[in-house]
Length: 502
Picture 1: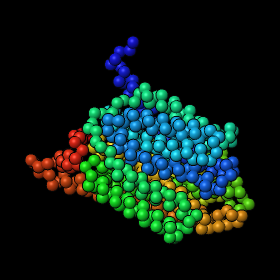
Picture 2 (picture 1 turned 90 degrees about the vertical axis):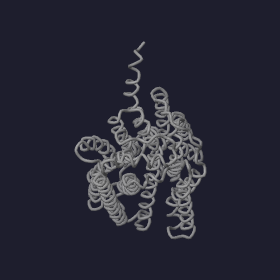
Picture 3 (picture 1 turned 120 degrees about the vertical axis):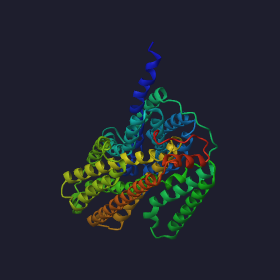
Picture 4 (picture 1 turned 180 degrees about the vertical axis):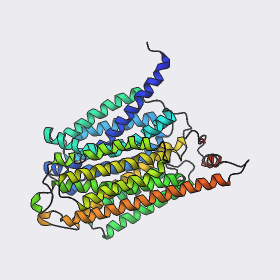
């Protein structure tokens, strides 16, 4: 028998790889069906717009359940929430893998969307279970999985579908989910002892309805018309529901998401950057594979196969993971917040390369590598800003909300690129090449805006912190003490973190 004292250290060493595997699995699942949409339309005899729901429904469900899982996971039920979410993801993978027709596929993909809520809970687990230094690196790497997994999901789907058929990718997801479930059941520690609070049911319903309405509007805008009365009405109702949700969250004693945390400029910078970078990233993730698959007879494109279209995103995944190591080295001498606009500017270079230079496949590979590198830097920094600004008992909720706005950005970027291409028709129903140029220029504008937002908010945060320190006099409360009072007044009943614990 092993010495009992060695068990915690061995479990701790195994915890990070297992959490990373879950984060990567979730990211791959979220993008698993993207290259298969034309095949699904053909096999299940549905239109391309209808087949798009095999991807859209996963993001919709993920955006709705993620904040709910985040709040449940901040309490004593975290282990049950994580394992239960992974069980439902496994069930969804099996349902999507079985030949049950399009309805069964959509239902399975909806259940797979529950897995999107696991990544923020994995971050909260790493923060609570690991020493501070290891926890920071683990959280940053987990954030990268949402970018790296997307880049791996596309080529994986293409290769498996080409070799083994339409449902092979979903069988792979089911096998991976089953292995991850067994590993998590062994290494996942119990949640810290924290007070159990009543669930904010009204807040969950308002947020779910508002987000679902906005995300649904981005998917049907091209079909309904972006200026149509019913689309504008849906957007207006969704915005009103979200405004009601914000007011409710500010007034309730135990909110689903503590929106007061957004007043911290670090949290605001992270959330706004997540939203805008999600738009910029998915503009390119949508444009590049479609461009290189366009037959050369259209006057542009390379007529590449689904496999090649998937492989074009491999540099994106590899570069995003490499950037995590670079950020880890740079953070020893540079404040993480200063790296936020740097990552955006790197993405700007990659987007500009695709916009103005598309004569060869190698340029597309280089462009996606640059975008992956920049996105990896940005996503490594965002969780560090949040973890440094919120108390430990709010980590799961704050990370979940950040995940939600990120997926809203993903959906918005995908819908925007589709709308721009549809507005520039070309020959034989294909978009004109000018549409790619316009969408690329818009993507460049998004990255410029994101860099400015990150720079100005983080700079303002540093200036505010310096002013607080300069004005502090002997015998007065320090900034850390002020934060402790604010946290205590939220009514959580949990002890506030000190700056040293962060």
